[in-house]
Length: 522
Image (cartoon, rainbow, N blue to C red; front, side, top):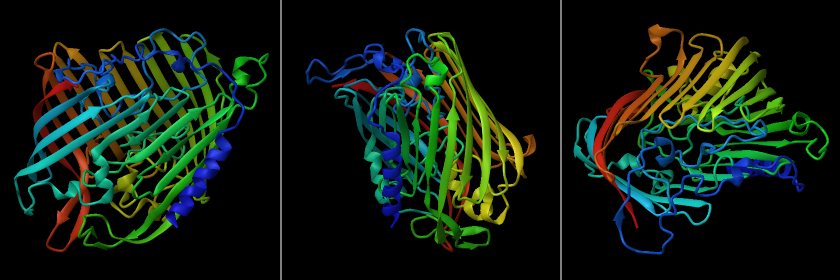
């Protein structure tokens, strides 16, 4: 039945969002060559020898999880601007992954790490193939237990990494076609900060935030000029969340009209959580999670998500884009919200850019803006440490009437500095959310990343509550052109176990890793 609903929504999205006509503005992203995108052509000579490859020092271009997901940096300013495609870069949780995305390159790393109560030796091998615009990255991540604390586990290999069908998706880090700003982009793997449309329903969604439960999801977007769309699926092996948006530019064929009118978008978003937990088995403030440490759901329900939107590229020049938009959205038809916002993107130089988005939100009773949010995979079972998010929405604990705002900004200065921040208010107790990331690269041989994700806080007094804060910091030191060392510390969600009664509860736990690796080219 779940696949019936999912297939139905997919067919509706594709049939609306893929018109036969092809018109509109030329695509600047499609004009860049592979050389402009930073690919070095490794592996093109047909040789089979193994050699050491220089370490890629740029976290944005060298990180496996980000490679191609964010728009590639422009080498020249776009003469007509980019207001027809004003998407912000994704906000990921990466920890300065040193794997290179160039064809024929890979990495081998060995690290000591702490996960939960145990200590492991991490062995990780990854390689990136690139036939044409495709990128395929098989990997072999193995954790070997060397220190087993209570509760004890007899296995040498960490069992929680491989005890679900979806966990085997780890063997394929990603399969990807194109770049995010190409006319067509497709990615399978871990989803980091996916936003559908303007984020009124799906905003910065991560499909893997629980370290014990890996998910291999799908995300694709396409722009045919006259229209296009986006589709996101949380988990190929155990699908639960499917959301898509389709849009048209109804005036794009009128060449004599002003550009702002020709590029107006009319869009609609449709989807839902098709097994949204309504009730989970609980005892003494915890939920029953034995034997696979996954919450026991007593009742679930389909939550439908629907919105319509309009987007107007009012200003589109080489240095400035201003794109107002408006959304009307509903969660399960119970409550409605109105979003009125604008993108303002400033290009100082081709490599120094400021992206911003500011939005006013009218939140009606029974409506929660950005319902599928960054940490929805935790909230759908336990929102703010209480009942499932759907149960709280239906009971009126969240989704109260509120006038709020949302802001996100992303500042990149050349290749050396990158700072991203998101902040929103949604009313009620603990109604503020914050996400931020800072990247500094090439401080001599050192690169640094800092990340903070915080949901549901009132002020500084509970800004770092353990059950609602995810943070991470990482430092990478390049010892030679091919050898690096790396250390990281991450506070991330997982299920705390109570083996004596088979219960568990969500809480963040601080884990660390330290190790070394090298880059190879075949």
